[in-house]
View 1 (spheres, rainbow, N blue to C red):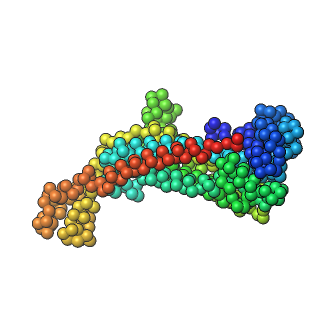
View 2: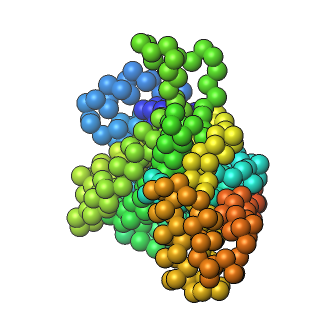
Length: 449
């Protein structure tokens, strides 16, 4: 199954049949229909038992696929057919079946995302000490390590995992309450039935199984959009670092890959471009999800249709973005020598904060800042070294030697906690990816049977 095929027509129809089977088995469990009938309904609730041409014709005529499916299931179930769809309503089946597919998509996304986080953890560990220029406002700011940069991505994705955990119980909830949500047709056993179906399908039960509480689904889509923000940020940063003028990152694409039909020298990034594009598409799903979460009264087909289409497309995109993120991270090459070379552009001044703080202990921070700033301006205008300019000041020359000044200006000795943070983030990545795989393998693979 892929993101592109998961929500195919037949896949969706089978998911609806799975819900019909779960409903019948649960109704037998609480004494609403005979067990023999429920068993037969569940046995026949497979598309292979249906005449697909006749089913398609019926759906085209009724414009109500659940009605057509129920009729077809009733026919193939023999005597048990009279108990099919006992008290259920179309929206119960459609929403629940679609959620089962969304959950499958969610599992696929978690698998790919855990791979991406694990790979980022490896990068953080391997490059914890790889020195590069940290940049703010697109200009060199202070020296950091590449592992520190990756650490920020890891922690953001770990926070995103926390959001998914929080959203799962509300998104994958069973809103199965009959025609209007108040369990009218279940002979006073509605709560028992809801709990039984929820248990069978591995969904969370709710107090009010209505058709208009769509906030859980909207929350899930916005969580996906926030994930797309994180993935897009990672992709965009890698894309910038791949520019010829920077050249600190590249994609390992192999010799056969063509970058341009007219420029033989050009090999454009491939994976990261798809990642950025898919992430942008996924982020755009947040607005319609929030709009869909405002239905009227106790049921509103407009909002249901908008939420259904948004949820499907967002789920598929979430899986795709996670897959692209994992592939992109696996393909990149780190050019430490280019990072070092780029650092040389501002080698003389990039660690002046360190020099300023050393002087601040002796003459105060404001005075130290102004003296170092003036020395930097002199360096920029005339090429005079920072040390020479400062040593002309008798007050400075009495406090610090040239060696002291030069040591303070060495970028490799002014990395803050970059190395420590990178290694802690590598540990966080391992812990997070393991937990994600475990969660995906346990509660998210349950089926209707």
